Image (tube, rainbow, N blue to C red):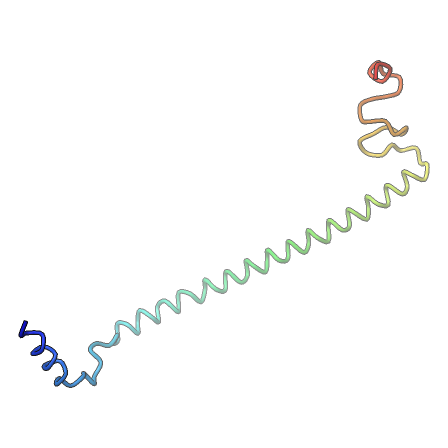
Length: 108
């Protein structure tokens, strides 16, 4: 039990180290430089990929809007009496695949 106070006395009287114990030096600098130089092309590539995805997404949105407008125009023409049946059904408004003269329609 006498070593505890003696150890505290030695630790209290020792001067703290003013110089750094170790520094990265030239090797640390070169490793850091290599990491930075390796990341620059990666960041540039990632930026171009993200821009490409954003461009394709915008192009898809524009194409979807155009097709929606075309579909609305086609529906307006169909309802104007052009004689063309709407997609998925007959001109009389029956369910797809059924007509008024089918036996299933008579039984139901």
